[in-house]
Amino acid sequence: MKEIETLWEDVRQLSLGNGGEIERLELPPTPLRFLRDFVSQNKPCIISNATLHWPALSLWPDPSYLSEALSDAPPVSVHLTPNGRADALEPLPSGSLCFVSAHVERMPFPQALRLVSDSNLGFVTYLQQQNDCFRSEYSALSSDCDPHIDWATEALGCLPEAVNLWIGNDRSETSFHKDHYENLYAVVSGEKHFLLLPPTDVHRLYIRNYPTGHYSYSHETGEFRLELDKPSRYVPWCSVNPYPSPESKEQEMSRFPLYFNGNKPFHCTVKAGETLYLPSMWFHHVKQSPDDEGHTIAINYWYDMQFDIKYAYFNFLQSIRYHSAVAEPEREESVRDSSAGDKPVSKQLKTGKMIDCNLLAHVNG
View 1 (cartoon, rainbow, N blue to C red):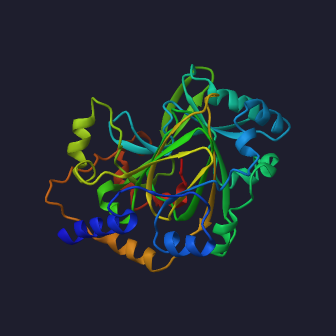
View 2 (cartoon, rainbow, N blue to C red):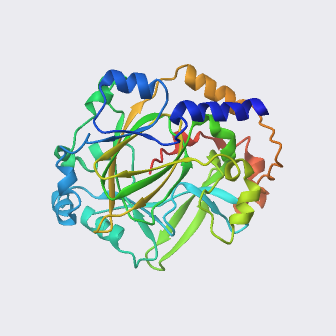
């Protein structure tokens, strides 16, 4: 359908112009400019010098400061995975894929921070609780940064619905997804590497319904077990891994030609002291580089998006079945669940709960 391909090109030009670069602002925009030039146009940008007044920029890179500040706080939520990929697609023993969440447990913050920076462990630790965790689990740090982004709050006409703290390392990775939030993502230490695609590129990411599962970690054996959720649930998720291994690259490229043979996603690196405006419904994949202490630290503000005509346009586009001139890959084989008498989980779709990926988890990196 050449009409959809033309739309991809038009939106790409409107979003970033001929240069293909995310626009960088040396100073925070006025509320009017932010609303007019970026929010209304659903256009990302990176803002420098918007958070340099935060004490966090100088204090948080010091692990001893964070540990002392949170030494008397209640235990924090810690997400453990064998490979750093939480809220992502992983293979089951059958070879089929499921959407898997991390093993989550609570522990004192100083212990959690040590686990994040220890590269010799057989698992990856990521502090990525979300659900407004900064104003709950990490409230002792609230004076180190602004409670909201004032020019964004004025432009959007509301306070952020959630403020989240993220502390990870170079093995922590977030798979392609979108969120129904206007996202202001401020890096405090280390760097975040984003791949971005506009909402109109939805067909290029091969969104499919996958059964959900979770990791269960045993401290006694040091092993992870991947278990399907019961009762069965399904989540629509992006199938593309933009960084396939050398062994699987050729296969991945043949399975997902619209992504790998099409225009490259926009790439940007957000450094300490910089803030990314990530518009609602933009698809994003996130990797990170740590600071000298082995940490990447960021805080993000989720503002409710306006469910306006752009939302209606996206839903309409997503409902269209795109027929490419390139041969489409076959769908994943059905997943079998031994608890259902070896009945294919895909057959349980009518009785299992269907859930939207944005309701299941907001995964921003």
